[in-house]
View 1 (cartoon, each protein chain N blue to C red):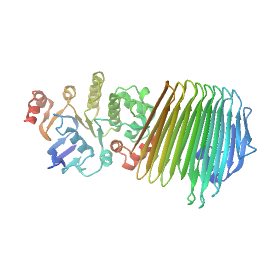
View 2 (spheres, chains in turn green, red):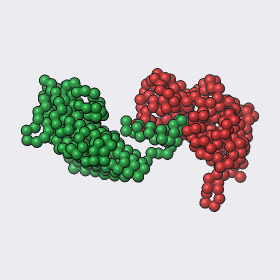
View 3 (cartoon, rainbow over the protein chains, first blue to last red):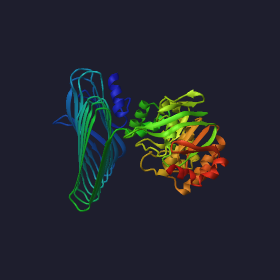
View 4 (tube, chains in turn red, blue):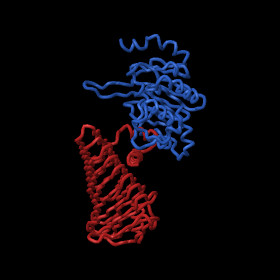
Length: 305
Length: 237
């Protein structure tokens, strides 16, 4: 790993070196190292690029890191990663993609992550996207996530994209069985001429299933964001989606919440709010001695914290 | 010492400008001054002028002899003026500790931040990590607002109707907070209030009616005449 790759790794995974436990490092489309444990196996796919991460039933308190680093301009890749998580597990999965583009050609990473979460398992999935580099080539990331939660499974998905990604199109689709719960938290900031489109579609098929989809975003400069949250309640279930956006400068934010109840006991709620930073918030912080720019930074940082 | 010299404040209305503060001259020495008077009399406007949130249409404001009339809000704050809003502001994602720390202007240990909350009668452990969002009640927010002013510890502190939105149960504690502040603080404390109990602990009372000072003096001089209704009715005639 060179210094640029080390920086990317720190930004997306908070790691300085190869992590403890199971991991798979992908650098510029090549294998950059792999570690497995007694309970977690990682196998390269034979038919297409990507890996299978197989977690044995009953695996608890273990983690898997699968960072992807791109520092070569013009590289475009499509990767399939499948997570097969057994029953009664409690694991953390940290994925992330960092692109450094110093050239004039677009660099693009598209990852399709499929999760099969076994009965009564608990998964925390953290995904962080980061871009840097002063080249004119775009940094593009299009993550797709497919989630299949078995009975009483619980999954928490934290997705963060704060800096440097020029264009992103995120799609997340989930199907929930009886008693399953899915919590999604998205944090997004776009600036310059960036565009970000996110779509979350959740099928609440199981009795007693539930989801909470929460997005907080800040759109600055000339950036554009589109947020779609679609929840279908097909059984006795509960669903809630919330999009909260701060708009600044000449940005544009579109929120499209959609809830459909196909069952009399489906309880669904959506909330969406878009607005600029309230003037009184700036004034309050300025009366504490902050300048207007410092006050704005505090409000944005707090909002995305 | 805070001085207002010939301060006026007008806002444009359809036909002609409306004068909200009319050529006020007021000198605030160290101690506890309560500004009272009927609603719409210009009290909150006066507080905002002192905090630098709005600027006078004419006249000047001096802090310890220094002209601060045209300085912005941040400069007012840095020179030592604190202002507790009548309606505290909510922030998504910013915690009580974040705000107290910003107010103190230096990093605080949790223990130090908790101390300021205890001062206003909040059980610090329950509040320090909470977000200053819609989950806090009006009364809780008001106390946090006051705690921020205490944490700043500046030479001038302005409180705009601290009792508004506080239930009777909490009000007793609030009086104690101000009583304590009065004993300890050497600076200028200015409170806008209608409450007899707050007027009772004032060193000086200023009555503001229709943008003008209708009366000013020690508590003993002003207090007895306050509730005869004259000042209120004269504003209506």
